[in-house]
Image (cartoon, rainbow, N blue to C red; front, top):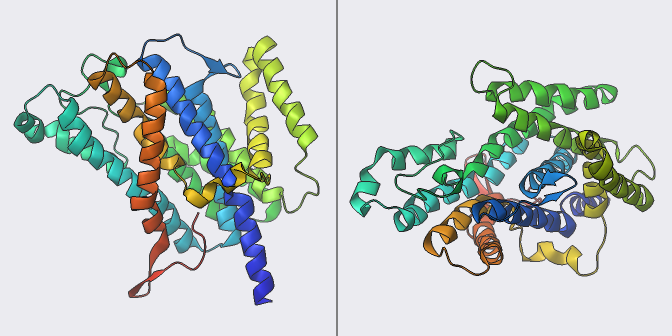
Length: 353
């Protein structure tokens, strides 16, 4: 029985967190680099399925997160371990990124004297990003550049993503037939505190509501995959892929609704495939999260320090990917490998999400 349980756990982990999902995270991060790079360099905007590349990347990341995080809970339904795993997955990498931005990128890119930069209150305030308090600027940094010189506006997505994840445990404790509806209701309820100002349709809230269904459908698909035979079909995936192209071309107003369903399904189908070469990407690490964290400040730095760079998007993509691997091996993986158990610190014996 123990051997059978180990095989089942290993199979589930491979299904939910295999190299293909890592590949998708890297692809999403590169889409962020490409989409934001077009804006930062003043190049003509481009789109995929009728959406800007950077927003499509967010759609992809939320769909991946819904599917894989639901799988983490279903494999090990322990509340404290789940919450600790989510925090260990997000916080160390975020803290390192914020510190690097304030202590390294800021002094190199600021127009202020180093002493003036260090003593400016905005520098200390920027560290509030570690606690999900959004601070967009460092003193004298990236002034006059696109997005009004913001350092890392992509960090706003981390708090909604964390809240959506923390909504899953109580929902999965509901009777099975109520869980899908519970996922939707819980995620929407948790998004409400994120509204800034009295008006319901705050621009940031609109962004959150757009991403909610990707997470919801991804989690719902993971929930039903063990109950529905032949859920994952290549012909259905190709049909949905083609339908999105048609919808984006001729029925733009309906494309987002179709994408809410089709993209999580495509993510799950591709993520679960066994690819001979690309499927082993995960053995070298998971740079997707670090790539996403560092992409924007790296791009702003390249624009500021090397405005005549001949191929800025390619350079920023390579630098962001390298930063993702450094973040993974230096901070993220060690944080996932260790956890408190009672009064002692021990190495985890199961794969962390």
